Length: 393
Image (cartoon, rainbow, N blue to C red; front, side, top):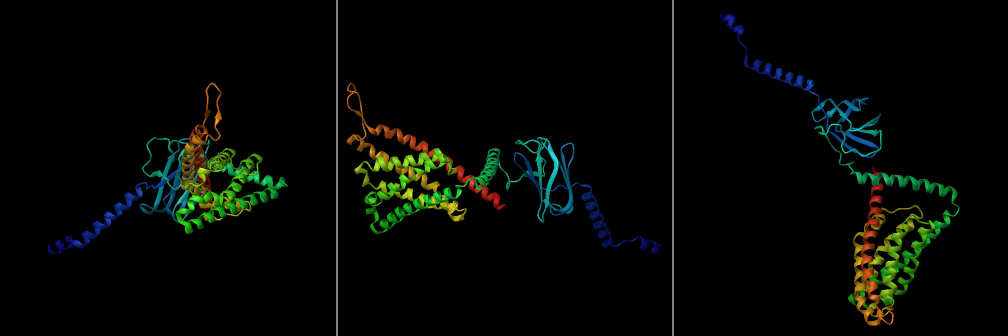
């Protein structure tokens, strides 16, 4: 009996190891039976869908779009559940093409699929409820309006490239035009640089006293630069530059009203500190704008200068308009007192219509012009830096 009972006895250590091994086998079997899905991030454009599968060191890729508009994905790689086989399927909201472009890296699998029709989808999948493994790819995400702007920018870039190539082949005066634009921007840059340096030096030497004689020390050069600026309205009409005619006309006309009508015709305004602020803000903007265009004529770009040209206007342009508005407001009483530029009224009405009423209307138009030009400049900045970001990527 003792021999039989001895054979039936089992050590506790053996029981523990057996239990652990069984548990491990059960987990492996469950893991094998369970379908593992990787994290998938998506974004879209009007013509394409972008998928980013969070699966590193992926191999044995099997990616296809079935006839029923369902994307099937299977690969071996390292995901959220370790190194295993991962699968997922997506039934798209609308038909897509069966051709797939994909690229596997050490970190992820990138998939690009073209839509059958170029249109914006309100969601990716046919079912309204989003799969748990699917999330937006915020690195590529754009809303519909931003995507339309990106598409428009691409089309404009293509058109511009074609037009540039055609001009290079057919325009015998291209070199002459570029030479003219280079010299114009160079002259304007030198003129506004002289004004800026002159005012800065006098400010450091004389302090606030320099505010009161700014007009008498810099007016001649400012007259020259602003008369030259009329060419910026003519150049778009002649097709020499791509900038719009209307924004250029608003800026040039607005500045010339301030310079020639407010400051130039009223001696009482020429000694006021507001002249200093108007001239200083104008010249600060232009000493970065003109060299940017000057270098563009010779197909050269300095990144810092580009950033300054498309960024400094954000604080300086509204401040310049505000300083101009202050100058207009200060001149109203002077025009009323001097009756300068007043319009005579018929004898039955008597007297004359003060020019200050015209300036009050101009004040309203000034802030309307600020909105138009600010919007125009913001779009330029957004388009410029977005296209640069795409080139970097």
